[in-house]
Length: 318
Image 1 (cartoon, rainbow, N blue to C red):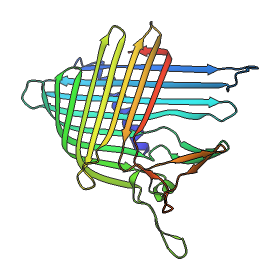
Image 2: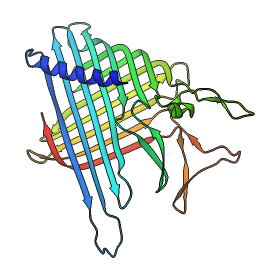
Image 3: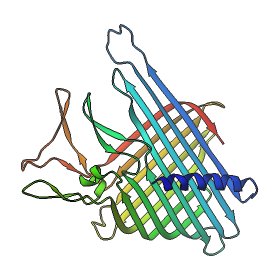
Image 4: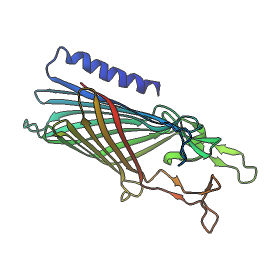
């Protein structure tokens, strides 16, 4: 996976340096850094001291010359939270690289024959906390990583909107941690065990390949003075495995400029992945206890995931 880091760096450093000598490039982006702190001393109503920080970087590099178009975007986010005496815990973590290379189908700048590459992962380890003193690894960099390669048509009716439609898409899920792969995390095939001895007879698969149809839609525009609205929607249907159960990834970012350096932002992310199992729990005396069905199996399955991050802090637009 170190080659993915190299790809990200080379793509954007290379395109940015080339943009300095070629006016066919358009580049830009926004960086925000938000902080929040609560400090309590002899506070009768109760509560906990806390400190939190979130950062977000959204950059793009677009090339257009004659009938060739190359659109690149990189979204990075990271956040930490510390409440009371607990250790710092993550509140946000995202790597999302998208690159589309297209050729104008009819020389009208509307429809483009396009190949699309997308890489999604995270920076650091994520944990589940059954109690305040124990933690269990649930994900890390490249566990999972989602790599998508698609061939299709990109519709660009105006500079703000792009809708990419692909009937030929390969989606690869990578789980680079063997323990997570053995558990069948993120939809890979789990390890196999001997029914008598309990010994592992086959490692869990670290890669899952899917083939299907894919739609990627993006809209970004200054909807009013100092207010930028960005929304992205990804839809994927696996031809061979429950094609009616469509994977959804929908993001919304509203960035509001207060003055030259201060800003406010609202960021939401809704995900549904039919291959990602979410365990349900009850909290009893401060402990998370798995829920069980009447047949003894745990209550788990695909669920709608939702995240919201609201921040006020420093901002830089370039």
